[in-house]
Image (tube, rainbow, N blue to C red; front, side):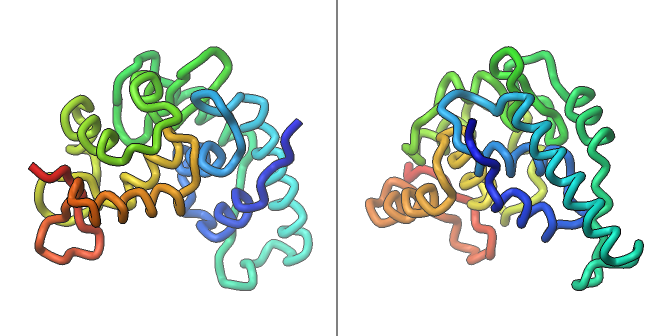
Length: 201
């Protein structure tokens, strides 16, 4: 059985109380090794158990006060797992930023099954951008990040490529840079720190 990835715990602790259910699922899906769409439910539960143990240990050591950096994690294992169940959408298409999906039986993903079917395991960033722009009804409207213009905010793109492509963000970012250099991908000219990436037309 694969070891739990410490990067998940570190990122979760860093986010503290602002960590959302769907973000934790995405962290697990991005960092835990897997070769099929989504993450097994028992793996999600193991991370929840680990975070719960971590939270109880931290609470004991700080006597209920804030962490050293002034934040408090307040992770509730049972509430998290209940939220995962409640947010599972019985659909293969995008249903909003707080939805979760079951691309296969007893697996959970941040992204719909159709995305995994079309792009699972791929690191062709241009293919991702075209798919997200043309075949994901409602997705772009739900995004709150990124500058003006038509395209995918780079951070969002890296999240999708790393999760659905089952790779790491560094590889995804390198592919975006390669696409820019090759002229396959362009950014809008407003120099927004979260510029949107789109195919060259």
